[in-house]
Structure formats: C-alpha cells, structure tokens
Image 1 (cartoon, rainbow, N blue to C red):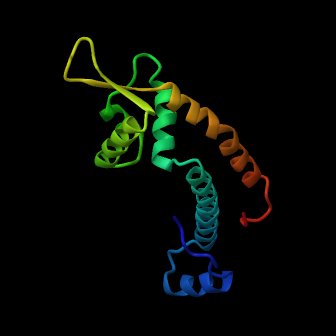
Image 2: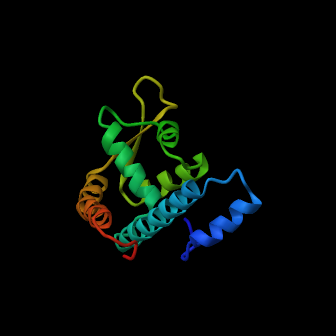
Image 3: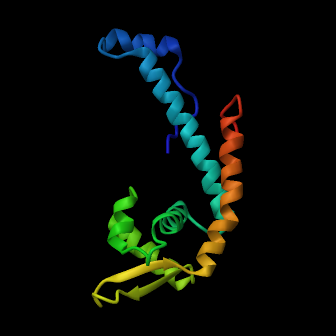
Length: 149
C-alpha cells in the first residue's frame, strides 16, 4: 500500500531537486501518482473481497489454480512460486482454504509424498462469483478521471 494521500507539489519536488540533483522530477512525480492510483484500486478490491469473505491471497490462489491447475492440480510449492507471497503464508492459506472446502488436497498417484491441490466445486463457484464484479471494479477505476473511489 501507498499511504501518502497528498502527493508532494511540483514546487516541493523542485526543492528536492536542488538538494538531490540526480533526481528526475517527472519520473518521481509520475511514479508517485502511479503508486497512489494503485493503492486506491487495491483498497477498493480488498474491500470488495472482504464482503465476499476472501482475501487477496485466497483470490490469487483460486485464480492460479483455475488458470494452471486444470490438469491434475498444482503442488503447494508451484503455487507459492507463482505468487509474490512467502511460502509460509501460502501454506497456511492453503490449509485454511482446504478447511473451508475451497480446495482438495490429494496424494499424487506416482509419488505418495507429493500433494496435489485442486479447486473444489465450492472454490470454483467462489471464483466465478467474485470475478464479474472484480472486473467491473477495475473497469470503473480505469475509466475515472480521479483516484477517488
């Protein structure tokens, strides 16, 4: 998250430029605006997910499994490698998702130690339920003139 609501003025950036000549004002200004916009969108998405009882991590796991786990599932390590989230967090989230009936965990037929994770019908239904409004939130955000949501 980017928590700075009021971005520095151009005048403020110019004063920093005097102290730090290597600074590129246009780049910094553009990056700060991008960070602010992304933070506003992320807050809107997280609020939406909370209404549906999921987190961004759960949502991303559902998406990864739907996208790439159709041929027998994925291992926890593969899921973690596809997300920018620590493995312990992924492991704990997978456990809670299994408990909530969103995932199946089964042994691989060739290697009994390997655990394969797949979506249950409940998990797929949850994803199908949240995706339309998720896309709508993104669409509405991208077509707004301001960052207010």
